[in-house]
Length: 264
Image (cartoon, rainbow, N blue to C red):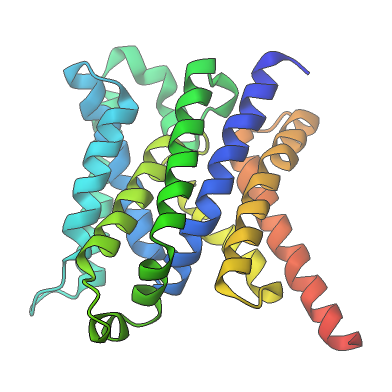
């Protein structure tokens, strides 16, 4: 295999493994729509970062974190929270698309920002993704119990004297970081799939939250080599193929679960 393929497999695999456990909390909290809107705002962050001359990932992460914290506190008496999140996310996507389209030096990479360009990952990109992925996994492990209690029932956590602010903020920051680094792998339109599909694939066979997180990490990591192999064989875009591979893992998991229940 060429070096660029190894870098793609390693970068996408590490990102998928980190997305799995965080995606479990996204599923448990029913926050997939928030994650999608944060990803859409990330495209605007990439454009602003390039406009002011900083790394696109830094711009994406900064704006995604701010957007996540703002949208998580949305929900006044006149506009439902889901509606507000959708408005902000899609306005960010539209502005980001327009901004990137008007910048001559990134016009040819516009589809890459929307659907990823994992085959163009450099060694520095892979190192950054590895650092971010291991950091996300380490923080998730460190805050696992408060994150889990807040996901199951925030009232229980409060009754036990646990403040929900830190776990909630940490969770949103972790989602935003994965969105930022996922922009190069599968793009702003598909990154949420890596947050929700692997946990959905792990759910039928998991008996504990910890088992579900571990299995989701494995499913997310496996989607990378399977998707890249599919892209290699069909000459299709690599980012969407990784997402399709995750979907295939989910379909296989659902089928295996039904067969197990039928014959057990």
